[in-house]
Figure 1 (cartoon, rainbow, N blue to C red):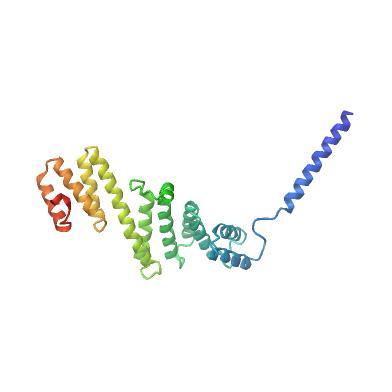
Figure 2 (cartoon, rainbow, N blue to C red):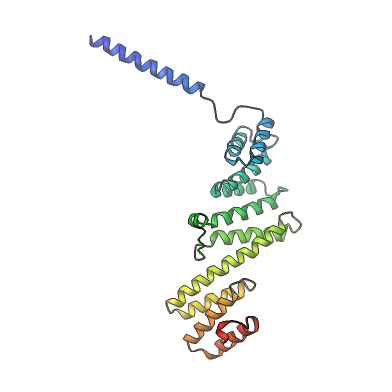
Amino acid sequence: MKKILRLISTSVLIVLFISSCSSSKTEKPKVEDKPPSVLYQDAKAQLQAANYEKASEILEALDSRYPFGPHSDQVQLDLIYSYYKRDESALALANIDRFMRLNPTHPDLDYLYYMRGLTQIAADQEFFQSLFNIERFDRDPSHALQAFKDFSQLVKFYPKSQYAADAQLHLIDIKSRLARYELSIAKWYFKREAYIASINRTKIILNNYPDSDSIEDALVLMIKGYERLNLVTPKTNALAILKMNYPKNRLLK
């Protein structure tokens, strides 16, 4: 009797194993096996329809199945774009770096600098900021600094690029963001009565971001710092600059 039960249980396990294998064989892949030109047209259609998740799936399949296919370079460029649109900053940056490393003289390097700058800006945004529209100027500026570097290289080496004008606008915005970051740190030092450190931060704003919208506040904070330190001459000089550029400032009344 025990032998019969063992045979029955073994038979059931074999049936289950065979059925699982057969079901896995009949399971279709996410992306159908089509010629690369057809798959690429499918990916383009998904990109045009703003279905970036599906476009990514097709482009990833193309990249892995046909790494040296007729559209290989464009597939990787489109994949970078789809990752960027999906807010997959890490994937986009990794693919940009890989492409630039393997193709240091590619004719679309201006586009890659542009996309890396845009992706760095996206990475600079925090979740709660995009969700609740709350700005935090004291957050880590490393992504903003890298974006500034990428856009600067684009403008410098590819001044006639179709992306150069927009990159220039982004540079202005990034300068304002970095100046506000320095201002937030200067205020932090001032509140803790570290007036020298606060003044030094305001000097960074005046020297590095003279065309930003934080200059007036930086000057005011600098003047207050000199006042707390009883430094008459530097305070007088800073007041003169404030009066020359912002004559309606409340500190002058």
